[in-house]
Amino acid sequence: MGTHVIEAGFPVNSDAEFEAVRDIAASTSSTTCGLARVVDGDIEAALDSGVEMVHTFVSTSDVQIEDSMHSTRADVKARAVDSVERIVEAGAICMFSPMDATRTDEAFLIEVIEAVSEAGTDWINIPDTCGVATPGRFYDLIEKVDGHTDARIDVHTHDDFGLATANALSGLEAGAEQAQVSVNSIGERAGNAAYEELVMAVESLYQCDTGIDTTRITELSRVVEERSGVPTPGNKPVVGANAFSHESGIHAAGIIENADTFEPGVMTPEMVGAERRLVMGKHTGTHSVRKRLEERGFAPTDDEVRAVTRRVKDRGAEKRDVTVADLERFAEDVGVEREREEVRA
Image (cartoon, rainbow, N blue to C red; front, side, top):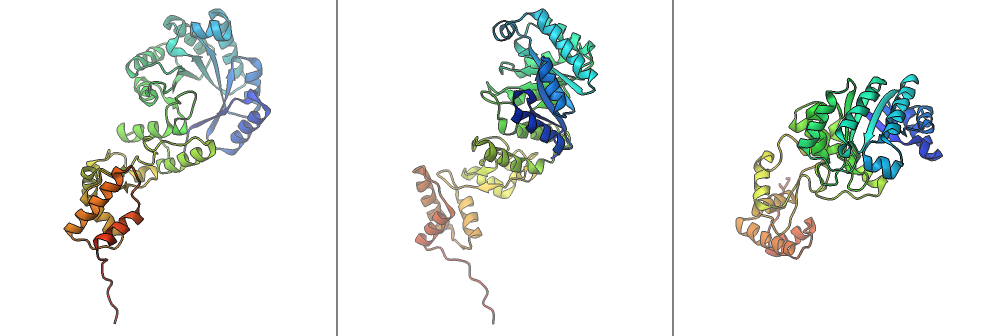
């Protein structure tokens, strides 16, 4: 699909994960990245796995330094610099993350960023580890970080308040060149910025070419849903089963005339490898019922369409799915005739 970087895993975590990262690095033309704490063993494992990029991280917020790492600011800064220097010396691309950046004392955050920049990191990743940023605040933070480093900036956002994709886009607006995303938003707690949402927002709303083959986004989403065992909600943006579905009579009537009436216009189902659907339920109108009947070979009168529509609404009001088989049965009950086929001599 043209995904630029694949962060394949945490090589030091286990033999199985090391092998998985190694196999992914050997099997793709995309840049592969391995995760590592600011610990020599982590960094060596990542380098040994064959990835081109090592993403090293350390907590910089006081709450995490004191109560998770049981360390000090001075130790954090020193270990960050040492780790970046080790990765750079090995010839790998280096990405450094000040974990929990959005809850970090700003002066100390800048101090660490300047130190790892001098040590030669290629990328600075700014993570909203606990999902507490808002788009405006995140924009200001990325803009400030950009003024204190020559490294390229990457962002990593969490969805605790439903703002992950919005914050990632805000980071890009402020000068970040890359965003870390996950398919179907899968991640810690409420998840991360969604691959499908960010890509399509950049492509459709910002009119920028990401280089991603967007026509395979729905396919990718289904593969991840199947392999992960994590169901995708029907109302999930871009890839949910209802993303391009229309039930309301007003919406369906507009869609039949021109899909742009009740869809974004700048994003079509074809762009993401999906299909538009007119679904039937208690909000279904006559336009949708007529279209569906005609698709099934019926030739209904106006009165017959109204009669079938009433049956569809009644069944939908019972919170029951209205299937094509139901529709055909309703049409037969009402006495709708099928279109006559030409009789060949």
